[in-house]
Amino acid sequence: MTPATYSAIRRELAEDPRAALRNCEQLLARNSDDAEAHRLAARALRALGSEERASAEELAAIDASTLDPALIQAGHAMVHNRLEQAEPLLRGRLRENPFDVAAIRMLAEVAGRIGRYQDAERLLRRALELAPAFVAARTNLAMALYRQNKTVEALAELDRLTDDGPGNGVLRAAVVARLGEFAEAISLYESVLARAGSERQPRIWTSYGHALKTVGRQADAVAAYRRALELRPAYGEAWWSIANLKTVRLEEADIPSIQGALAEPSASTEDRYHLHFALAKALEDGGRPEQGFEHYLKANALRREQLPYRAQRTSSAVDRTIALFDSPFLAAREGQGCHQPDPVFVLGMPRAGSTLIEQILSSHSMVEGTMELPDILSLVSQLGKEGSYPQVIAALTPDRLRELGETYLERTQIHRREGKALFIDKTPNNWLHAGLIHLILPNARIVDARRHPLDCGYSNFRQHYASGQAFSYDLADIGHYYADYVRLMRHFDAVMPGRIVRVIHEDLLDDPEEATRSLLDALNLPFEEACLRFFENDRAVRTASSEQVRRPINRDGAGLWRAVETGLHPLRDALGPILEDYRV
Image (cartoon, rainbow, N blue to C red; front, top):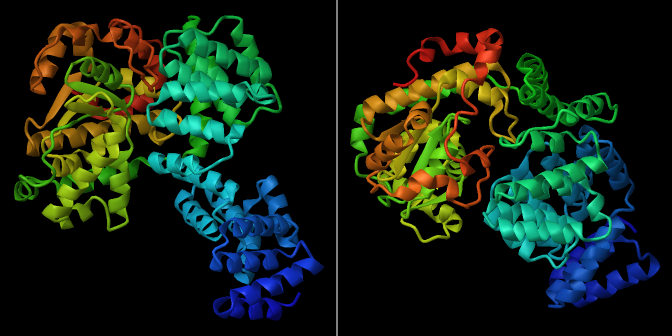
């Protein structure tokens, strides 16, 4: 069929959709795989109010598009992860026909694979505008939203799906888990695993194990991880998930199994760095910390190749923040923002004891624990689109500062289920944005969790993070990051005296009651005995310390750096004088 024929039908659509539909039906009678005729028929049916038939034609158009040579070629390239070949093919197809929904969805998948989730979201919304019944596009949209931490929106898209296949069940479980609904997530995983075939998918067993770990079902979590390893012995994430259980040790017999997995040709780079992390932990737990350190070096080197980090960028961001947030700047904005006192921000370095602080505070009758919330970082990303951050903050009006504070409270409301007056946001990376937090939420409480730099630094080096901590895979980068963090906190102490409450982890270990009383007093909270018995709190905990905070305070993780001190000189050198006076 010639393009001229299609053009004539498109013109006819606006004037006489019934006639356009008849012409489409004639074309389809000659060739039922005419994708463009199906698309035009769908537009005619929508114009005539026949939504169900229109949806059927849209889906038929998508099916027919899969026979297009350009899409077949692009699909083949995507199967082999040759995205640089697939993208121009798909863009060329869309220049020819911008209504090809199958090509739009495929291009969105390309964008998603390289982390351009906003582009993927835009493309998928366009696909669903053209074909609202396109289940694959709606599932992809939910995933793109989930990847951007737009969790509520992702759940809304999943709610619109009628397909309850295993893929959607797993995605829904991940979404509801992020919203703190772990009982529902566990039930969803169990439902998926009960289906034929799904029980042989190691990734689902591992995700199930993560949910079990979060609610304190440690033995069940280990069993789930072990089941994943039965299915795929070289599955690095499952090995690391067991090693990452801070109160569980890998067995001596696991060491040769992990070594064998590392020798497995099918093991991917992702498997290998997970396996090196797991083997390092197993050797360390087995009394061979020096051998373990060698595998930490290998694991971090592999991970750093994937997540390049430039310490100077963080230093420059701190420089810009210090230059902006001087005393006159803050004085000119005093009393602005949203005055609700609800949030308690616990920030600082990862692995500095923030989960312990959160567990203590969330045992108080007035404070609810949530999780590491992405909402401040989302606001920062939003501001970054309006100008250079943090300088763009200087242009914010009093109304805008109040609006940003209100937006934060609105977005975080879904995580508050206990009706308590206060709630905790313990995203550690918020330390860089403490100034913004102060301006938009001047009555929020801010707690700086600080730990000895060598203990904290080596703990970060021993930890593999799912995302967000690219600095942690090089000892020198960790030292520079820690020094920049302390430098900024000292500046805020000078220009906002008393605004940030500091908790030194070692003080909490030395005298838990005194440190807890001091913390509560600084936050204007009455002392409650339950805060000293935080380990009896059965709330879900999502961080790497989830098992540790279910036990009384102990020193199991303290001083581990001493066994490998000679290898930590890059960390020491980067810390500089901060190493000796980190407390202030």
